[in-house]
Image (tube, rainbow, N blue to C red; front, side, top):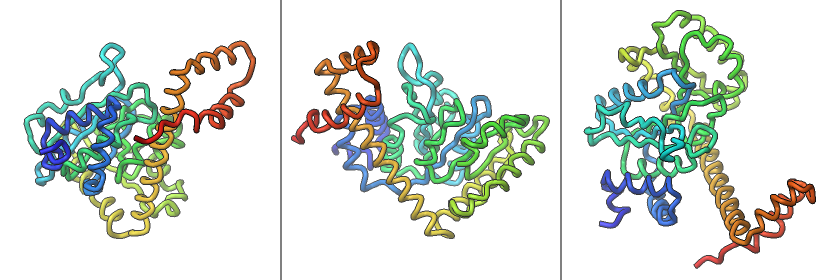
Length: 324
């Protein structure tokens, strides 16, 4: 069997190798993704985001446990900060979820951000496609968890979970313009802590105040209390996710159609942007013009706005490599 056939058959080693190749930006990986694309679109993708310390990985561990008990197969992509020493993921969620490592129905992969902002890695979408093509029923994507700008997950996940903990208080107000507005399901983890009802009330107020929700699709986010360490509240949470899935897939076809349109549009936009930047930068670096431009800026011979316009207008056609 070739690599594509092995991935479609669920060969774990081939899948792991391809995700590594995608992460490393190898040209051959893109060719395989092209072949796998027709086989994607069956898995349900759940994004899990929230600040560090809210218990995202423990919650993911419990979600895996629940889904496996339901007979579902699960893929997990855990995004972590980049190690300054190895260049890989700094924590390695496979360690935190080690008890599932021998389960053939679970595939867990840690990915390093490599300086990318937005909570995901540049290669996350490709990795999701691989897990989808290999036949996983659910794909859980845990973001890096560094701030309120982690909204890229919305472009990849069917259901986005926002994880909070009691006592965030003013933090909820502070981040309302960020990730709170993109959550489909909210989870207050570590619910045994003092202040859980106050946090819940603040969340409910925030949701009620978001009048644009109806025009965005009509889904009213739900709130769940969990103690992931004790496996409490997980069943209710998973039922809440299924309710959102039912809403997305059955009750509102127009919303699903818009979701798929937006996701396809953003995926293509990001790929075009990535390719254009890569082609231009490789050309400028190879010809030594990049350094000349930097020196011109330092010595005020020009400005970055004019240079950017010049690069786009002058070099986009010049540096394009003819297709072989």
